[in-house]
Length: 114
Length: 115
Image (cartoon, rainbow over all chains, first blue to last red):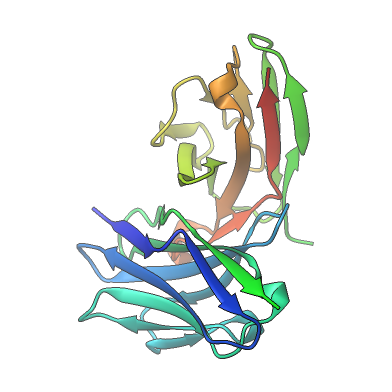
């Protein structure tokens, strides 16, 4: 069985500050890991994914995430927040070699203050 | 353009009046799924389909029906809507099994209000 925990339903940062959104997962087999972003009044779009290649994954808009097996984590970071980054962020896990149906975390709302 | 298309995008209806939310994808994806999104609860899976004529319940299937008669279409049916089905609904699809990692492609969402 697989599960995802996103710490913090809301994260607030100032424009220009570091963004850190936390995601921990559990999986009985090597996982595939994803971050999706949902801008207001839009559907979800893929931000980045880890599929067992490089552990540091770079995505769109300068976001990146690092897969840490020992910590079962896949935290999302961005060096400098922009106002346009305000959105809902979802972490998801699927199991390699399994049904590949992903399980989603509850989401974290990123608020960016001027 | 590769996309998942949902209709309607917005709907207000009354309790008990049957409605269908359509979903269509043009990427030849085998896997399709419906989710509902509610504040504080994230995304919850309603139903999914691994292929034509193959459907299965997700986490919150009560009050919903689906069908998969064609590969590209996966409509969500609310036979007798109730106010607790007021929500934002998303359809999603995924690549063929052989190359799949679980990455989903989402529609724009359908906001349903049941009075």
